[in-house]
Amino acid sequence: MQSTDEIINKAVQAKHAVALASSSKRNAALIAIADELIEQRHSILKANEEDIANAKGTISDVMIDRLRLTEDRINGMANGIREVAELPDPVNVLLKRTFRPNGLEIDKVTAPMGVIAIIYESRPNVTSDSAALSIKAGSACILRSGKEAWKSSAAIVKAMKHGLEIADIPTDAINLIEDTSRQSANELMKAHGRIDLLIPRGGAGLIRACVENATVPCIETGTGICHIYVDKEADIGKALSIVRNAKTSRPSVCNACETCLVHKDIADQFLPLLKKEIPEVELRLDKRAAEIIEGTPAGEKDFYTEYLDYILAVGIVDSAEDAISFIEKHSTHHSESIVTENKDTADLFLQTIDSAAVYWNASTRFTDGGEFGLGCEMGISTQKLHARGPMGLQELCTYKYIIKGNGHIR
Image 1 (cartoon, helix red, strand yellow):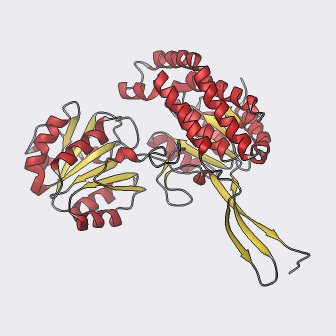
Image 2: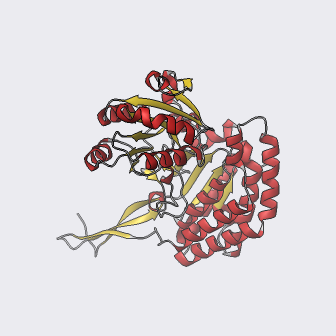
Image 3: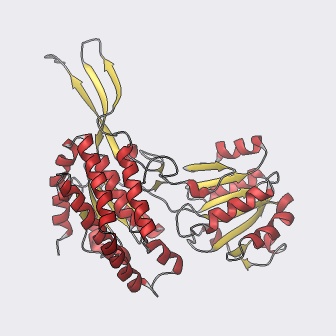
């Protein structure tokens, strides 16, 4: 087994070749990677079956669904990579050019990060998404999969490395950590000077560990306690459809709704309909909501919980302002939505809520790089510096200044 330190060194050695590869060469590598995922889909699915068999009984059914690969999902992974290949090259883009009075020409241009490390849990599609975005952005990547998805990730990486080989890019531009213990995660967090950016994708514990312990630059991503506020002037049909989609279409992802707030003036009408609309969902009700419909009494912690399951916390508020205050107190600043036909109320919500994505009459499930036109995504950043919201190619680049003179001295 290769040590984590050896894998980091290989990525460092490969980064310059990726950065110097032409746009057409990097795009050719992505197309070859997409083709190899399809070509090797049977071995990938076999590895995934082993992961699922090993995970059953240790993780929930919704997390098993998050882990599961199908031919359709592999096709989606490949198509996402092809979409990334078609996007404009994010590297060496001129952002600003300045001519100084002394004759210096100063260009601000985008540049690759260098080595990007991604620590993630039980979603094997993150393996291909992260690698594709890194290559397109001119960087080498180090992937650290959770143990539940490791065999699937290893099969995916094998296919991707073959794609790199076809395109004549060093195969060490994509690396998978072989040690799935906490030690390997700690080594990535502490690889100052060799890893240029660390991105954790997973639960609150993983993200907190990286943010608190990493000595390399780290982007805080995606714990999603997402809210939908149903205003007194909401269209009931829209509200039911939006909440159903946001909660049940894929409850195990970070953009799924975890809390629904309802204006007191519409609660008697809306809540019984909501209960009928999503019968598979356990409703955890505050005291006022429990007076209208049956459900599980909610404790204070229920409104601070990312369930990632068929559970929805439900509360009643007196006004839009109260909904905003509630969200500001309980939110992780990921995605929030208001359902209303009143533009002034919507504008108040959109301008006041301090989250990465704020919606009016739409499901929070759209917070996704593909849905935002970014191709696949590296994650959802909930911080404010450098990147916020779905992270695509631009967020995976830095910039530098290139200054041209003619014997200038100061």
